[in-house]
Length: 404
Image (spheres, rainbow, N blue to C red):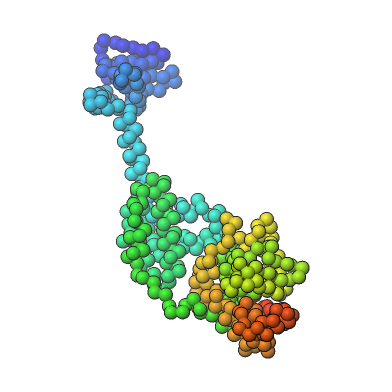
């Protein structure tokens, strides 16, 4: 390669000859025609900045004639005069164009892309489809075809407000999914970072949800309990949550007692669950006789988390949240609570069995004020309580089968 530094500038007439001569051909003012050995030809601008020689490609000679390329070099020299590096200015301009193009992506495009990239996170195809389908139903009609950078709190409120009261659980899940998409879009530079207070502005503008009086005591009618367990087993909840739910109902235990159960408390050979006083509401140790169905649930739980000390651990190995059952029941649109199943059991025992009241109360770990009765319960009630819990498990299985 040679560098030609002719005293005369390049002319249109001289170009055909120069195209046949590999090297750099100087036009003056730092502009060169570069010809490669394989016949490629392009314009190059050479300049000095901060005592450093720099070279900037300006494009193909087939696209830029002499007049146009000289005008381009004049613009670059003006930048240099202002202390601006032409290469840096070009790169910044290119980056801004790319960012503008990225920010032009619509909310729907971002939602679909987020869903595609995270499909492996969902346990099954049904759960994965719910994510995108709820967004398609409740958000795309409002702002799906908008640039994701333009979606603001008032727009989210407008999309969710119609279902916030009637379908609150669904609306809450949709809000969470909108958040995931917008945060992903911000991280991917498809929109600017979400300002502080963005989500507070959304929730504060949505209608306040009033809790119904005594909603936390709502019980499932015992004739529907088996049917509800079928719904739980068919739900999208994790296997651990399903097993924990069923175990809690089978044992008539409090939610916290079942969620915090450890294998040290379980004796599979004796078929009992021994809760220490520290974990009991009344501060007294309590032993729960386990039905064959409850034992089967425990064996399934062991297979899911064989190394965990907890019987029903969360994905992070911790105690399940106190909201997992509440959220599950909401998704199933059940008019009852987890705690209410203790009343379900008690109503069934009173109306469908002939067991003494004190035996039924002992199954719920309720204390007796009568010292003689308490002594009786400590010594004589276990056999009857075991039979009671076996009958409860059988009743649930039979009513489940009837509803299948």
